[in-house]
Length: 199
Image (cartoon, rainbow, N blue to C red):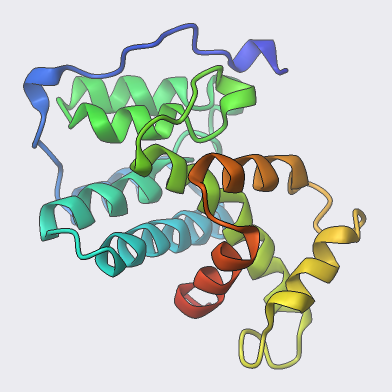
């Protein structure tokens, strides 16, 4: 475990701020001011889009869709400039902005073996589930002449078995996240293929 990234906390945000969410435009401004790596920005846009799409697919209301969207949109906001403070910096920023504690907790738990915070809620678990898988499926799309068109689960799974492909993506995290969410890897892959924001 990357001990240096451990948050050593189990409470995030203030319960008095339940229901308080910044506008998506404000979140985008935060991303633009913090993140210079365009690929990283696109990754967060993709995860945010997947989170919103999943919440919509479950029939959740507009506020809940926004909560899920923002959680995905901001989860890696501090990685570009402050990798050694990853998660800690964005959590503190969102706490200072009096944001909904559910979003802050979801971000804090999107890498349990790194940050030491377990994903508990459905929101937490799905952010963890989509994070690595979104990036992996996107990497796979970039090597296919037809991109996402005609992409199948079996093709993604074949690449998952090839440890040299997108080697920085943790296969263990993908499997762990799937198990915690109670959703098969196949089902998660299909959702990403169907709903991923395309470049």
